[in-house]
Length: 309
Length: 286
Image (cartoon, rainbow over all chains, first blue to last red):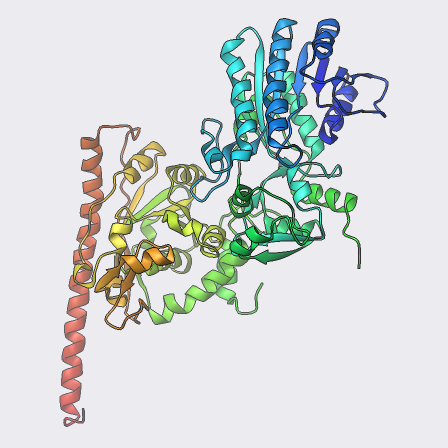
């Protein structure tokens, strides 16, 4: 199958591309960033997804399926850029796909869609609304992109659309929101809270996408890997140490003393869990994760060891 | 495990049917280590301080989904804690009763973390359904916060029951095991609920006792489990139908409370008589 991947030059995008290439698919990639060491089997186009040249890639390569991974979080881009990339980009991908006869579009979204909060349930199912978006405005563009992608299910009924809400990635690439948060040798926690964190290895992300493409499922699905672990365990198993600050002090210290610069609302995500139920996806595609929570944490630890002092 | 975890607690934790992951937590974040410490701390209270008497524990199924439904007794959560302890210490094999916690708890540092690690989650229908479908044992107090706010003089009363619990039990086809909890109102004899002080501390209220702080007295507590009640249906029935079922549960609990009250009053009278007889016999030494 000829598969077009947007955001291919990102760390996870590369893992996905190589995995699908190995599985025997033809890969076309679109990204503004360079993917210099792309293997021969990957046809790389260095263009902006919202541009006319990108449309031309759809026109000339005629992919059968599209995997849309070109979205960014508040950690990577400022708000105007985020709206441009996440909403503008997603719109362009669906428009081009529909115009040039793509049969299946997979939107790779995030499980943070559901948001974290004191009154939010453990284990979210796909039918839940994004209740936390009000308290975490930095999530709004990703939530909007997710819902917009979902609207293709009725706007473009002749095309199969899959919206995947994936948990954090953790593994050797060290890429992703969670991986960046625990990068330093000492990870700050909020005193009196130890939420569960759910993550999956990049290789399982690739495996899940392969399953989704193969089963050509229609609809919105949560995608996860192994069961979640408490933040304290995550910190310990990745070889980091943690220190806990009262929430008030944490707020004041954000972005100072080597602490990560986070929007204030992100603290909800260090206090309360976002855990999803992925049974529907597993049942629909037969997907099974291959890498355990212990292996994923070990992989990350080995790739990003904490320097001995 | 921590040094002060008793051998019995260790053995009973081992016997719990919980799917522990490689790091000693289950998929809900319930922690083996925290349970061991928690039950070790509860053990002297359950066995000695309150010397909790447990009746009818065999009415609770040994495994599979079930909903413990009972009355609130005592202004702070000693009823919940002792019901959980009774399922752990007085049932063989033991079971972990998972309560539905008041929403404010999840906002409070440490309380949020510890309730979660001990398997006590926020009272949301989603949690209720998920745990039951996962064959867990749920503990529900349908009186809600209205029930913990009962004062000493109201200690044998039942306030209005919510109806959600019956709908959830029907929807998940779970048996309801009614229970009566007695003595909590005497252990924490609230004479007043300080709502203003509670708001200051982020709680619904703080119960005030004749001696000030809501510190529980060493009163003998009792919990009686009744026969399981099973209601057929989908849980989407009209309120009038559901209210009938709620009334059945309520009646069952009320009957157990009444029996327990008589038992306690007889016991108190007899003890008093014995005490008087004893003190008279001693030639008025008191």
